[in-house]
Image (cartoon, one colour):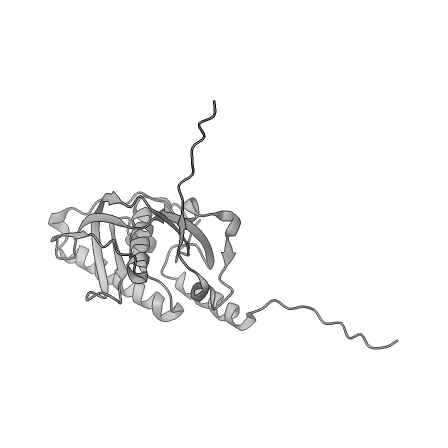
Amino acid sequence: MTKSGWKPALPPFRKYKKDMYTKHGLTSSFVYQLGEGDMIRRQSREVPPSEILTSDTQAKIKYLKKCLLKYRRLTGMGRGIAAVQVGIPERFAVIYLPEENRKLLVIINPQIINRAGESLKFPEGCMSEGPLFAPVVRPAWTEFSYLDEQGREQMWTEKDDTLPHRIANRVFQHEIDHMDGIIFLDRAILSELTLDSDPTFYEKASFEEVLPQKTSTKK
């Protein structure tokens, strides 16, 4: 019998996947994952403005910042994290904004005031939903009020279509959803769901305008 020349067709990016799944496992030691009780689905309570400067609230904010930076250090990803994702069901989040003067922005009790009429499709992932990506259609921008970590009233009103602000507007909407117990998979196009297996995935991703569906006039 002659020796077979057949070889299995192994899946691509094997080393990347091994490293990435290991890193996701490490982050699950401080970030709640979907299905671990009801934490990720909880409605977060508002933070009383009078409590923002208390030592407890400031300690929670400091911890959330630490978790975001640790996640980024371990994975090289992560643009925002809501308090509920680390077991604090309160309405605040930390957003990583390297393009702005404020690298880590704290938003407390955000209230959406206005949304764009234009919608964009772009893939999202989540620290609490493992190594999964799927496209989500969201308004191109959102205006909202919030309190900063000093308890001062602030507004986010950036509407330009630069890549940093498109991403920031999407991250804000993603994190505000978390405060309401909504995860990105609830809004995702699940037929396009994929695992984090390609190191160039986000390099190839782009925002796509989604035209509003025409309603039929037929009776």
